Image (cartoon, rainbow over all chains, first blue to last red; front, top):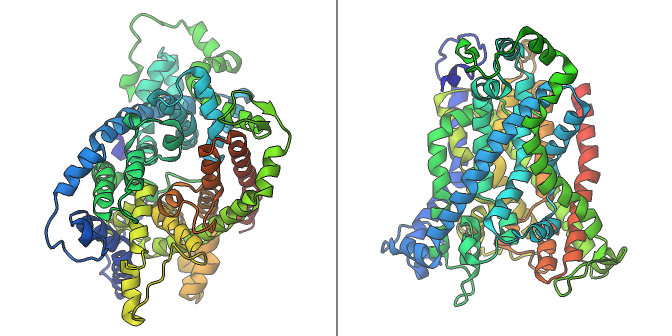
Length: 294
Length: 312
């Protein structure tokens, strides 16, 4: 992972460390002021109310629980089928991500280097999938014909087919900006195309694949529309689908069971927040330096 | 990176002639197909083909009650128009997308201006404001429907000024659409903000300095220098937030399911209702309507913003 050198900040002149000016302080105070209702209150509301009793959580206030109900989380595991949802989300999201990253970066290299018109058309087709909405009903029809309707395999294939465009779009632009000299030198030295891809292209693409990969894992992990249409039967539900069914199925009360819904939301969001914690620096840096230029 | 050129074990000890052959465009280009093929096959099979089939299915009699799919001309659209769903849902969807796009870009650009300078404090804030991007739109919907409940925290704060305030933000036809659009904005603002920060930091500092020396105030510098040079980031954010909102579903399904009445009935929710009722032809017709909206509204929008970039 020697790629950090590639993402070194662009040549900003070594600015003298300014003292923190009054303007900066005002802006930071402003940010803190905005962050309070924007981030802190929603997160706090979510966590404290997930640890309250049903009656107390229904008040939807920001006070600490009068009695801490950690067993809400056990209830989510049992009645909300959290374990099964986590399993399904993992066995779908990880292969989807791996497939999209590998196939997408391979295709991006081809799209960036080939001069053929047919390749240009193929590139535009796959990028189109970012902007155009997916056609759900024919997708179901097609999966029925293939005999994999309602299965995890069908859902996986549809996710891959509709997400490849993101990696193709990001990585093709990246490869176009790279000089082909090293690849050509390697080819003259007798390296095969698969070798050049594996040893040269893939490592150079790592920064953009990291950013693309994190955006993808967030959207795949949270995917709900296709899951609702394509995954039938409780035993195949991913976490968002499980959360929706769990929240919708509260026949005994008029509103939501806020205590349990909040516990489920917390548990469903946790895996991604943990992943984010580890890649946060490079992701935010990568994005704010313009990995997603239009 | 010379280690990468190590001789491939025996297999393709390429003689000079084959190397030259490989470099000639025609033949060399054919070797790209193995790399592009998996992507092309999967995209065509699970995106392009369903998209094309949808154009056909939208004009067929196709229900869950019969296995026959028969062309029926414009009947699906006529049915949907007669019941009022088509027009209502289209109007609601476009209104929702416009509100979400405007709010999204104003708020995210504002946050970007505040966090533009790279400093440890701002890195912390950037990471913090990114948090909503991580959670599922469903989860965002549940959290905000709690905050917006009549007895929820928002009304509690307003109640400090105006005691007894108990407006049902999601239960009132006048506020529901703006409220769900706001949740959408909240969910995605983190990423749009970072796109704007990238755009702002790509503006040459010298131009801003020059304007300042010429006596331009903060507002003039923003409006006449920064905002114009921000055009690519602006185009990207406006297009993505607008077209994304035309496809809205998750947040509305989690909060209002299209209600009250049909005040937040976006096209995708209408599509789901038709599907759940077994009217697959009608659902396809709605799906085609969304695609048509994306093209009819998206293409001129992109063209106009691109033109503005060039003039800027």
